[in-house]
Image (tube, rainbow, N blue to C red):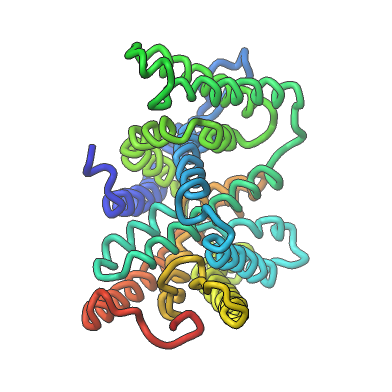
Length: 416
C-alpha cells in the first residue's frame, strides 16, 4: 500500500491510463467499448439508472474529492493556509491561474455557443503536478512544494465552487435538505472516532461507527445526486464536516485506492474518445481555447498574479518595518520564493488533466462532438504542460543542487 501512495506512481498511472483510453477508443474495439461505457446500470426505482461512465465520474470520483476536501481542511486548520498572511500569495496566484486561462479561452470562443466552456482550462491536477515535482524536483527546496500544494488546494476549492454554482441543474430542495441532514449526521458521528472521545477511551470497537459512516456517506451521495447538484460535491461536503483526525485516517486509507483505481479509471474512460477526422480549420474554437488556456494561460496567470501579490506584500512588509512591526515573508513563510520558482510552479499549474476532464464533460454534455474535441484539447494541453514543467522542474532542481540545498535563490520580485 505504501507504494500506491507515491506521488510519482500516481502520476505515471494517470498518464498511462489516459493514453490507454485514447488508444482503445481508436482501435477497432473502440465502438464496442464506448457502447459499454454508455450502457445504463443501477436501481432505476430510486433514480440511480446511470451509465457506466457516470458511475465513474459521479460516483467513484467523489472519493477523490473527499480526499481533496480533507487535505484542504487540514491546510486551513493547521497547515500552510491557516492564516491570512500564509494564504495570501498562493491564493492570489491561484486566482490568477483561473482568471487568465478563462480569458484566453474566451478570446477564442467569444460569441460562440461553446463560450460556456470557460471553466475547462482553469483547473490544476494536484496529484499529477505533485507527481512531476516528485519525479524531477529532487533538489528543490520544500518551500516550492509547499507553495504548489497550497496553490493547487486553493485551485481545487475554486474548481469545486465552479462545479457547484455553474454546473448545477435546478436544485431539488427536498433532496438537498435530506442530503444536508445526512452530511450533518456524518460529521457528528465522525467525532466519536476522535482520539480522546469517550468511545475510543472506553476501548470500544470502532467498526460499527465506520459502517455507520459509510452508510451515511452513501445516503448523502444519493440525495446530492438526486438534488441536481453534481454528485462529487457530496465527497467535498463529507470531507469538510468529518472530524480532522478521523478524516485524515480515512483519507490515508482511501488514498491508495484513489491513486490506483479511481483516478486511473476516470482518466481512461474520460480519454476514451475517437480522434475526430477533421482538419484544423474545422475544429471548434473551444478546442483552441483549451489547448492555449492550459499550458499558456496558467503559467502567465500564476506568475503575474504571484509577482504582483509579492510586490504588494513586500511593500506592506517595509511599511511594517518602518513602524516597528515584525515583517513577514511573502506568503507568510520564513523564506520567500524567487520569481523563477514561481514560474516553475506556473508550468506545473498547466497540468489540468483530471478536474479539467470532468469540467469538459460537464460543460459540453449537450454536444458530444465538442466534448470529444475538448477531451483531446485537455490531453494535448496537459501533455504540453507536462513536458514543459518536466524540463523546468529538472533545470531548477539542478540549479539548486549546484548552489547547495540551503541557498535561498537570487533575483526577481520574490527574492530577498
